[in-house]
Amino acid sequence: MSKVVLITGVSAGFGRHTATLLAQKGYKVYGTCRSGCEHDPLVQVINMDVTDVQAVRNGINTILEREGRIDILINNAGVHTGGAIEVYPYEDIKLQMDTNFMGVIHTIKAVLPAMRGQGSGTIINISSIGGLMGLPFMGYYSACKFALEGLSESLRLELRQFNIRVIVINPGDFQTKNTSTRKNVFSSPNIDAYEHQFRKSLAVIEREENNGWTPEILAQKIYRILEKKKPAYRYIIGSWKQKTAVRLKYLIPEPWFAAILRNHYDIR
Ligand SMILES: NC(=O)c1ccc[n+]([C@@H]2O[C@H](COP(=O)([O-])OP(=O)(O)OC[C@H]3O[C@@H](n4cnc5c(N)ncnc54)[C@H](OP(=O)(O)O)[C@@H]3O)[C@@H](O)[C@H]2O)c1
Image (cartoon, rainbow, N blue to C red; front, side, top):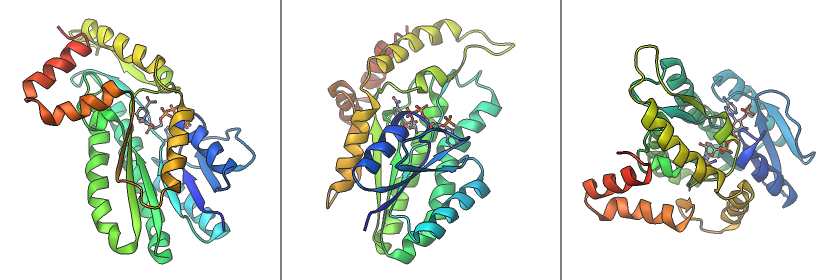
């Protein structure tokens, strides 16, 4: 019997490629879009905004009515914000947290009764390398991914008794539409003190994303993880430099690591 997978945010990027690949590999794939999106005919599209708890419950109930189970949940939908912590507007901070953090909570709470009933399940949370280190001018993005890290660690312990596995994926830089759709805020009506530095750091961030790996690579990795008998808890998927940075954070004194980040993001 094909495993039933739910992936949030399949209109683009990782979600789109992962949905297509898993469907081609024989999984029964449901993917969410906010408004009607064209997709591979093998992928069944459910309209769902992850910030809307009722829409999430309705979407997941629809899948459960049709399939009777959900074996794998991939929490992928996300937005990206850029700007200094002092100037970033509250409404956008809220949208960032509501999408990348609360959205994950809504889907997890909605699938768990079914997964507990089945006595099995896999939840993959797409975090980020930004969830392992606070990145400059992406403070709110990093904050919601750090929150997701804490949530995932706790969830992993709580769900073991029900044979439900939690996996965290930390991608590095990939070429997706997140670069063009990231909402960058350079100044507020009263504060323009960060603009010059943010523009310099943003040039580094965008250069790395534009030279990053393609989302197909991440989709392939997710497929291989799902096929493993005993997958690990965490997968960091990025260049050797990014993987080294994650290790260094725990190995070298904090001021040295901060200096490396300042140098990398052209912060003088
Ligand atoms: N690309 C990278 O370098 C990178 C690195 C680390 C982590 N990530 C993480 O990977 C995940 C996917 O990002 P991506 O790079 O593939 O970005 P993307 O190409 O911008 O795709 C984001 C997806 O999320 C959906 N989405 C956004 N807000 C939503 C909402 N409220 N409800 C439902 N769906 C919503 C989008 O749908 P719409 O078309 O409706 O907007 C889109 O399908 C995110 O969690 C992101 O933080 C990405």
